[in-house]
Image 1 (cartoon, rainbow, N blue to C red):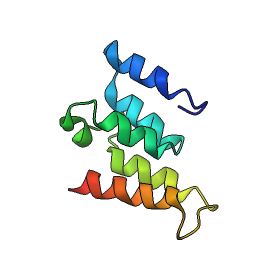
Image 2 (cartoon, helix red, strand yellow):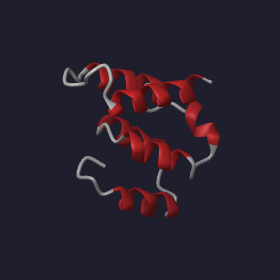
Image 3 (cartoon, one colour):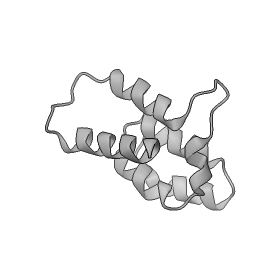
Image 4 (tube, rainbow, N blue to C red):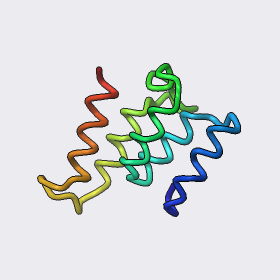
Length: 90
């Protein structure tokens, strides 16, 4: 995901790669559009899954979003991040 190879993510999902890891990779790389696209391709139970450290996708999003200091209040990327927060908390 970090390299912008979103198509590889879909290939991994089709080969039974861990969907949680693919979604978490999107969040870590700030690829919010890819996250939203992939979310439509996975079981909704993934949203409540946790990683080996007990973190949910929401925890991962907030951690990596908090590391960014280059987002403007009205940026489309920040709006997507809030959209994802809404999805993960509903």
